[in-house]
Amino acid sequence: MSTLVIDGHPYPDSLCASIARTYATAHTDASPEDVTVLALRDLDFDPNLRFGYTKRQDLEPDLERAWQQLLDADHVVVVTPVWWGSVPALLKGFFDRVLLPHRAYRTKPNGLPEGLLAGRTGRVIITTDSPWWYLRLVGDTTVRHVRTTTLRFCGIKPVATTRIGPVKDSTLEQRERWLAKVARAARKDAARSGAVGADPAVAAAADAPATLQQ
Image 1 (tube, rainbow, N blue to C red):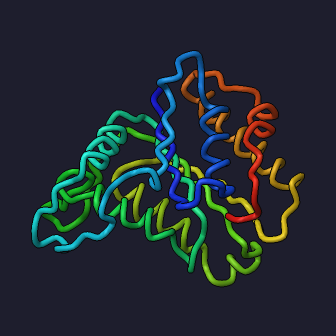
Image 2: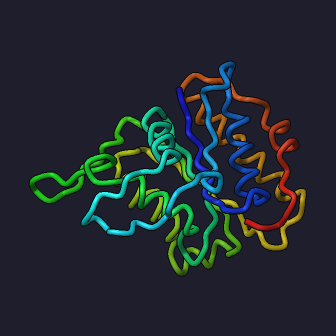
């Protein structure tokens, strides 16, 4: 099973970056090529779909490689913070540029969408500063955006969800527990494919975040 972990946070020392590394470490089996972490901040691309859908905008080499990694993956994980009820501009721009009509999805004659990335499973991992009662009150919009109207829309399903937070004012011990939770989720995903991951306690301790930022 090939797994692609997409780190959508622009800051390399964020909790999200630690989560992406922890998930990959815990999911990895004997072959290191089985899991790839794609840190979008390291890619060189224009996040703006400058012509909308009216004119072709060629993919930069980094996006072509990312698209191929997506095609090669059997399992896709998206790690993102909740910013203004959505995702960072970096991740949204990546979705806009890469998940194009007739490649990631198409419209059937009856007007309904058809995902072209079917056959893949997914997981969304979000970090948030908001308490869960607030998310229930205003709506879990980031999860709905990434899980339902992006991954599932393109045919990736089922898509599991892991929520982390509130991150603000969290302690090192709390963040270590969150990383252990992420590692358990990764091992659970790997078990479904028959893979054997690394020990979650080792993965969590090795990748403890340096800051409180999501």
